[in-house]
Length: 292
Image (cartoon, rainbow, N blue to C red; front, side, top):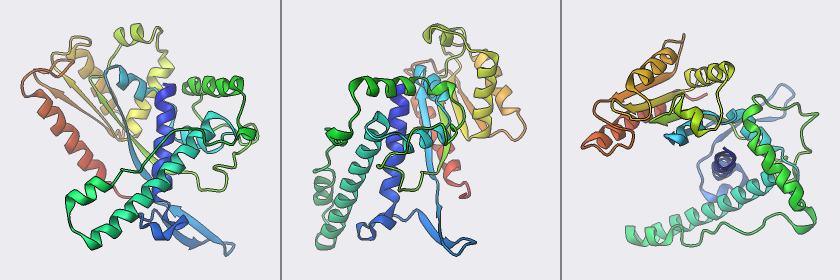
């Protein structure tokens, strides 16, 4: 869960920085902000939210469904103290976004000189690099403090709401001057695991409150579960009952597709094609959602 949360924070802030074209109008990135006047006459920024699907297969679907709320993830990474893993991830995301914008700009300039697709493909991504330390040595936390940051990420699943600003870490210089990313989350669960298998794999049990919270999350956010009728880890009957109970919630945004003849590993003839089609149709529905 810590690994997934770390990547989610990185990915969200990478896309946010990449779309943040008001910082570098010459980069040619798509503008995700519109400016207006607030009541005091100052400028206010309205973001077009990032559309992000948190997905997973089998054990991965269980991890994806148990992640902290996207509001908490964006807040926690945006307010990490200097030198922590949170800030290091933000800096890596920002650095890669800058490289990507430069590459896109370079490709755009080349395309005006040559329409060769092979030339553009061979050039794009050639100079992108991620790695090294971005935090200056004087601000870098000792290894013990970095470990505590990692431990906090591991405990994120128990932190469901944004912490009080007064009790949170001091905002980092890496992110406090920017606008916190706005994200609309969706969830994709392929061959989800249900108890008792999920409890055995996670070496624990889920409380009724955790089960209710999961059902609420999947019903209030656009979500899709795809499973096979011949899943050997969880019976289709149990998966069907679980999915129907979430779909039946008032105003539920949860959908499910049961693929006849498919097992847990999707090796049977023709079933992977049906799986891809189900996901593709669901994605089309997400793209058709109104902004806001």
